[in-house]
Image (cartoon, rainbow, N blue to C red; front, side, top):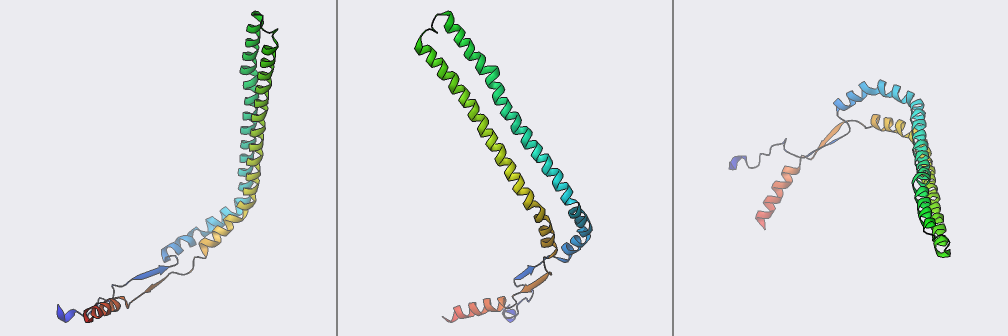
Length: 177
């Protein structure tokens, strides 16, 4: 054992790798024709997806805005009318307090409906603006991605072969102190 103390295994040192492996480069080379075709077809597909997303946003928010109005018309308005009819039967509508209260309630509900519809309209406009912004950015992201994939550099390894010697030197120095 003592005879082999200074014999270091020269294959036992840290190694670092950089760049894509030859296998990865081969895979990229094989995929390159398909990727080039996909990127050539991309502008037409991007417009198709943009149109679908825009239609979805407009229909979704348009339906929600209409539903708020229908809810008011089909549920809240009849409930208010029924309340007014009940008060009229009891002779309570002649009261200024009751009339003012019911008018204020109807006005408040109407303003809430308009407010909800306005918020939905604003959300729709913001969603469309974001979609427009993303469409402009998307056209340039895929060619950049392809470029990044293809320019990964060359595969290389490096090693620090002096690490075992530095460890032994540190050990010997610690014995001397």
